[in-house]
Image (cartoon, rainbow, N blue to C red; front, side, top):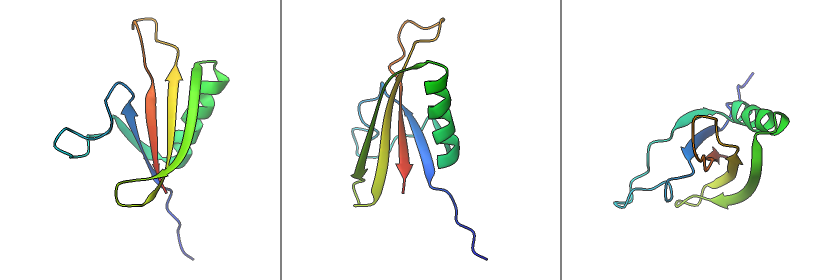
Length: 92
């Protein structure tokens, strides 16, 4: 019996200008999780009314590997002025 592993999801702060440094190196993700956990977080955000905006894209990375990108903008937390949201980067 083969075991299929879930694609990894990297979560970045949407405040960053792209996920690459000026030198072309990938930035360190804010968090990493399975696709199931990421989907659950996105679902929970919607259910709790925290999601203000959500956009999803199918694309490829710089090497041509398929990716799913979800841009999530949520309500700011009470102790923050503005929360611009998060970028969920699914490796497919």
